[in-house]
Length: 294
Image (cartoon, rainbow, N blue to C red; front, side, top):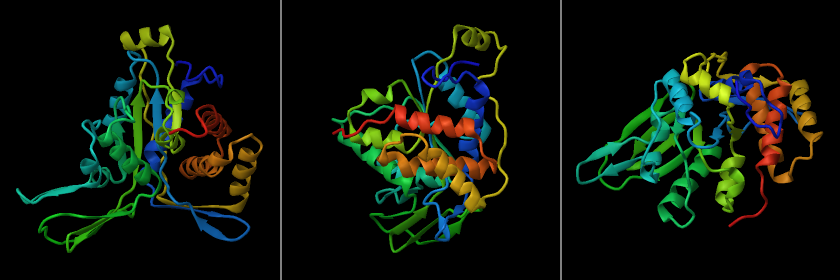
């Protein structure tokens, strides 16, 4: 179904499903370790992130809703920094848990994500997302007299606690966003960093695809549970395979570590090498990368 991106000649819709389902499963990971010539290392984050872009009116939102239904979540609207990292209203003594904790072990879904570099509020949201997409643990001082909260630890290792108004949160989540904006249309370095942290899919359905969707002859998205374990050690031979695979391509130095990291995350989910996915990861990183920005 569909031509994901003619740049890469990917016309097999099963690849789209595999990528999406790997992202969903990665949200449940606790830890990924890998072995290299020095010894055993810990991958800084275990979760994959996904951005689906394309024209308006081609069912991107419907696909996102299908994905959300599989994980019993709803797309997030009115995204603010306070919503993302949590807040405490001292006037009403009400605590709003961080969205990243509410979606711990799950996905944060954003429909039609956009960014205006002249908006201070959107800069704050994007800067917060950039930080949490790469380094998820954080601390925040909550203003007001908020009761202490004993540390809660989830099955995937995520945790949250409050002591003396200091909230410490260590969530595990995958972000999935749709957008009409082509990554190369942005001049902002913040958006370049945003796209580089994710797998970018250019969704380009054919007319036949859309007719099939309209007549209910084709599914927008098919869920498959790839989840096996929440911790994995990638053996040296598998790490070497991934590293050699990426190094055969002319990958920009600023994308080198993230490209290898994302390939390792896919391997951790599937527990086998998928060269179609690796090729897509490398190609999309190169295609949507721009040096510089403002």
